[in-house]
Each structure stands twice: as C-alpha cells, then as structure tokens.
Image (tube, rainbow, N blue to C red; front, side, top):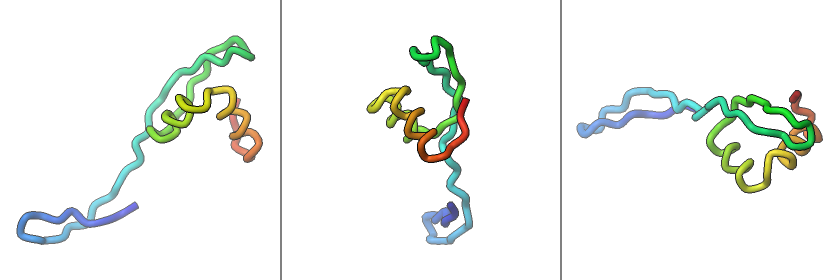
Length: 67
C-alpha cells in the first residue's frame, strides 16, 4: 500500500506502508509438534482469539498451503 508522508509545510513525499510480519512458533496439540509461521500482527490476534487449531483448519479449507 502506498501513500504520502506529509511534512509540517504540507509537502507530500511518496512512502510505502509495509505489512507488520513476524515469525512465531506455535505448539499444535493434535500433531504434538511445534510449527513456525510467518504472519501479520492481525493474524496473531486472530490466533489468540480463535486458537491455532481452528485457524489452521480454516486456512486449509480456504486452499492455503500449510504444513
């Protein structure tokens, strides 16, 4: 996503909004193993809310490739 950085004098310079990605490890009880996922901050909030098992099953149902 792109936008403008606006200074105090109202000059507009192009800038890019980067996604807040991070690598996290999660323990999956059904497989009894740890998995490492690269995900965004909003996806991390979703995992906290729904749980890792539900999020993984929804991702598989949507056709996303996961381990």
